[in-house]
Image 1: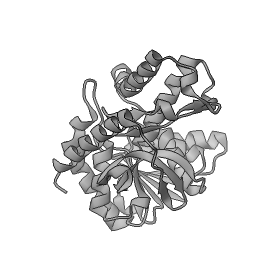
Image 2 (image 1 turned 90 degrees about the vertical axis):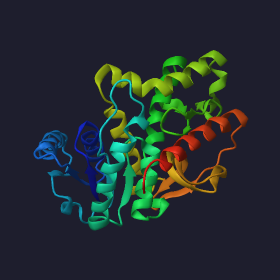
Image 3 (image 1 turned 120 degrees about the horizontal axis):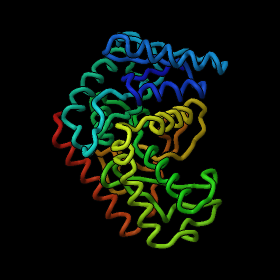
Length: 304
């Protein structure tokens, strides 16, 4: 497998490291800044050599080098600063992503695309429309990252091993994300058996604020996004058919069409093989609706 990561900053390099450690394929780190992807590639290869991992990571400033890619991970763009929302990045990053899409059209049109750049859901939609691709092979990473934060908070509150946690986060990767308490469990036992209503509310609030807290403390989220992308790539490469929350283009599911939003999907060798439609209650659906409407409004503001 050939995996191209466009954007060799902190998150892009984390994606490259996580994918290579899992031995998912050879990695091309691509960036417009001369020397940056080459230096990151060298650093990662030094670690891989000590671990005995034979995947190769290469850095480049030339988009032509992405020819033949099986995966293209789009991380290019500016990141959030303290006090910013993901939507604050929309106009700047949309222009960057349009340029990236032109290069994907030229050199890697048939690859699987995973979008990481924020705001995640509207930019996933922009990529799909720009490339006129199949929704099965184009998705956004957001829900996977939100899920990792949700699971960490569940473990902290309950004191139960992270390995016992099954959970789900859907809707917008942003202010209207929906951590699903009702669909979460510990060792098959409903999460609600372990926590109070107040703890449930706190879990949702902390999950929504997790990214902003990390950014305020260290300037960027790095390790969890890289792991989230690697999990998605691995499920496709190994045809694991894992149910993962990803940003997908809806075509009637959940009562919506022509919008990208976080939903549970079966991820296998064909990409998004099925969108799982959960039976949301009235309160859950209200939050989901808010997320969809937020993304739709963002999409309207960006010329396609």
